[in-house]
Length: 228
Image (cartoon, rainbow, N blue to C red):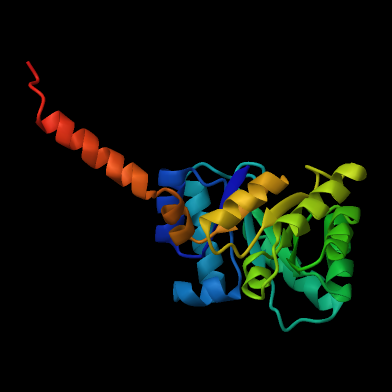
């Protein structure tokens, strides 16, 4: 399973890459807003960070960039996606899982612009991403579970559908909007290719009370043992 960071903050991206070995980044309009930078500046800075770290190439370190969410016509989505795709060869363009979005993703993939069909909340939506050859599909987890749904079966259904028809691994499944380490595990058990989460979730996943207790026990033993 690959780990992507859900953020547009360069300090978080750099920390997560050096500490957790993240394999890519996902952004959205909210992440760009929280970065405190204008949109084009934020994505250009990420593109420059990629170059500085020798990670050029979408196979090495993909970064998902979302188009203007106000766009609801296929031709407008395609036009804007083309513009942002030119900023970095690492960029996959996030397109919403609407009828116009599906058509836009289909056109962009034909042009060689890789896409990430996002805001997916049902297995039926995920099928379109695979049929049109999108590089990624992003089924959302946190929002659904916030509303009382258990998402392990939802992800497993997408995985099973993809395996049934030879899509598995070609359109990579990114479990998005994760809220907890448990959701990370659920997605891994279900067979998702990738999870994307905020830095706090990865930090939380590294902590366990017994690990802390164990370190304390061993420190106490070390301190009460002669070294020579």
